[in-house]
Length: 115
Length: 116
Image 1: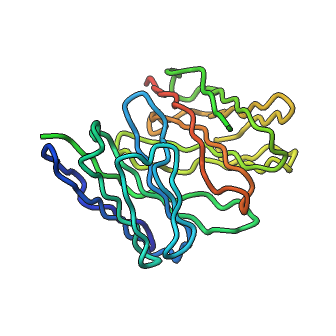
Image 2 (image 1 turned 180 degrees about the vertical axis):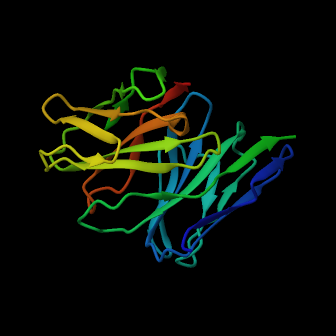
């Protein structure tokens, strides 16, 4: 079955440490996205990529970095510069440049906590 | 910038009854898409329904339907014959026409409780 796989499900970060969240999709989607979800908040866009080797900052990119070396993969690194990283992180993908407004499909998320 | 507002942080409904969740948005675009996503306790985001702004007909998916009022920039979700499995957070989301910007803008969500 096609879908989006996020790993790990739970992740703990020590002070000053960088951590990387994995996102892999086998839907053959061009576009991929990272969102952050805090309690009582909707999803906020961190980074998105519409094509391999290209990505754009979203609304809250500070303290995060991404890469898009393969169509299937869009890992997110939470750097030590992100002072409040505790949140639920969701990865999504969609068919890009589609005239029919195809929706984004989401993974199951990663819960990141500070030790 | 586009914004999405869900004015009801929490709603409750009796099983088998009907409930309507509100959503308003702000945009200067004429062509765009609107979505309702459901997030159950498992935290997975599940698409409930989608509406294209250029279509006047309201979208329907089984027990879920929308009331899309373009001039009022309103996009409410009606759930008929509510079931216990409908209990979840519901998020309204906006997206500009593909090719202009692919970003989804989400509201803060409405927590729906279904009482047996």
